[in-house]
Image 1: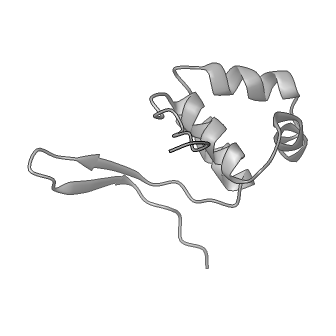
Image 2: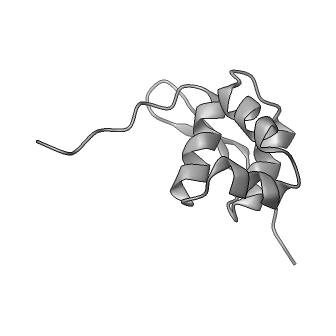
Length: 88
């Protein structure tokens, strides 16, 4: 198929955060402004291979998303390791 490119697979937390930002149609500068941080910091986080869970949660929250962490066991059973906080 011409003109259709498949996005590369997400293999690091930084790539996942970049994909999240991209899904919002935001530039790094836009996202940095929302996060009250520099564009350079957003770039550094997106290039990182090891990102703190608290950083991932903060960026997801800024994007209006909730974060869930699920382990998929052999055989396909799913175990929830982190559920979104319930709001009153």
